[in-house]
Length: 615
Ligand SMILES: [Zn+2]
Image 1 (cartoon, rainbow, N blue to C red):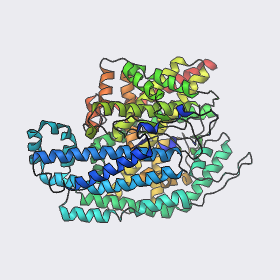
Image 2 (tube, protein in one colour; image 1 turned 135 degrees about the vertical axis):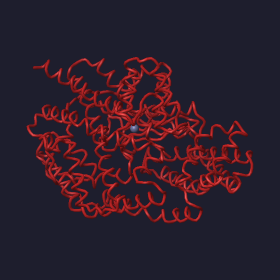
Image 3 (cartoon, protein in one colour; image 1 turned 120 degrees about the vertical axis):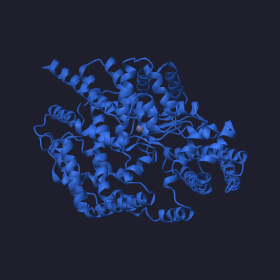
Image 4 (tube, rainbow, N blue to C red; image 1 turned 180 degrees about the vertical axis):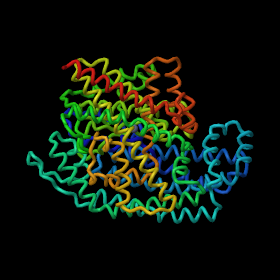
C-alpha cells in the first residue's frame, strides 16, 4: 500500500501541542469500519475470496467470460485488502504503543503476504497469453475496457520477462538479496554508537538521526559546527562498512538489470513507470545549468544569517525567526482560500474533508511522527495524518498533504478502482502545486514585511531541499550506478570522493559560495533513499511540474485549471510521463525546470526588495 510522505529530511521533529484535543481533531476510523467486528468479518470475506481466486490459476485464457470474472475478482479483493490495511495501519499510527493497533497491523501484514502469493500468477499468466489474445478479449467484451491500461502495463514487460524456470529462479533468489539494505538500516538507525556533544548552553544531546536534524539548525554557529563535526565524524568511522553495503546493493541492482535485459540500471528503474531516461538526464542537465541560482540563494542566506563565509553547517538554520501562530482553524481556512484558483468544487470538497474528520491533527505521545496522506480506501475517503503545531511550517505541510488528499478524491471519483491509484511521479505534483498556491495567497494577505519574509524564506528553503538537493542526489546516483553497471568497484572512500565532488560543485565550493569540509562528504552514507534506486529524482521533477502548473493557473491561462485537474482525475489510467505531458508539461524538456528556477529567482527578488526598503 502506498502512502505519500513528506520528504523525511524536511520534516521537523514533532512538538507536543498544548491545544486541547477533542474528537473533532481525530480522524474517524469508523468511516472505514464501524467496529473491530466488521473488520474481522471483512477479513474472513477476503480470505474466502483469496481461496476462490486460486481457481483462476491457469484459467485466465479459457474464455473471455472467465478472463473477466477473474480480473473482477482480483480487483475486488485488492480493494478490500486496501481498506483492511488502511484501518489497521492507521489504528497503529494513532498510538504506536497500543496492542490492539499493533496486532491488527500484524494481521494486515499477514493478509498482504497471502494476497501477494495468491495473485502472483496473474502477471506471468497474462504475459503468456500474449498481446494478440488479450486484445481479442478486449474486443469481445467492451466491459473489459477499464483493464486496457493495466493490461498494457503488464504486456509491455514481455521483453524483460524470462521463462517460467527463469522467473522461479529470480523469485527464489530475490528473497536472498535484501541483506545490504537490512544491514544498512540496522546500523544507521539502531547500532550506530551516536556521539554526544556539549553545546554552549550546557545541553549535551546524544546525536542520533533525529537529534541531528534538530540541532543542525540551532542559532549558535559554533554549536552547529560541533554538531556537524561529531555527527559526520561518526559516519566517517563507518565509511568502509557503509561503502560495502551500498556497493553490494548496487551490484544487486546491476544483476537484476542484466537478468531483465536492460541496457543499464537507470533505464530499468525508470521503466517501472515507463518514464523515459531523457526526463532524468534533462533534470540533471538543467540543475547543473542553473547552479548560479542556487549559489545566489546561498549568498543571500549568508547575508541574512550574517555569516562571512558560508559553510555546509550554515544551510539549515531558518532564514527568518518567527513567533507567529496559526491555530488549526486558521491553517485550514488559509489552505482553503489558497486553493480557490482551482475552483469552487475543489474547495468545497476539501472543506467537507476538514469538517468530517478525515484528519488526525495534533501530535500526541506515541503517535506516529511526521505527516502523510493515505488514499487507499477507494470507497471511503482519504485520511491525513499531521503533527500540527501551529507554526507556518505546519500550514505549509497541511496544504501539501491535502493536495495529496484531493488528488485521491478526484482520482477515486473519476476512475474505476483498477486505474485510480497513481504513482509517485504524479503524486508529488498535486502536493507541490498547492504549496505554490499557498505561498501566493500568503503574500497577498501578509500584513508586514516580517511576515512576507517568513513565507518567502520558507518557500525558498523548500525549493532548495526539494529541487536542487534531490537533483544533486539524483546526479550522484546516476554516476555511481553507471560505474557499477560498467563493472567498476566502489569503496566507501571512493564513494565519499565522488559525492564530495558533486557536493562541492552544487554548493559552489571552488567559487567560495559554500565551503565544504571534506569530512562532510561522507553524507552519502546517511541517505536512506539511495537504497531505493532512482527514486528521489521524482521529488525534483514534481516540484518543477508543480511550479509550471501553478504558474499557468495563477496567470489564469485559458484551460489551465481544467488541464491540471484532468491530470489528478486521471489517477493511474495512463503512463505518468505521458499524462503530465498531455497537460502541457513535458518533463523531458527544459521548460518545467526553468519554471522552478524562475520562481526561486522571483522569490529572491522579492526578499531583496524588502531588504532594500528597510535600508
Ligand atoms: Zn508529499
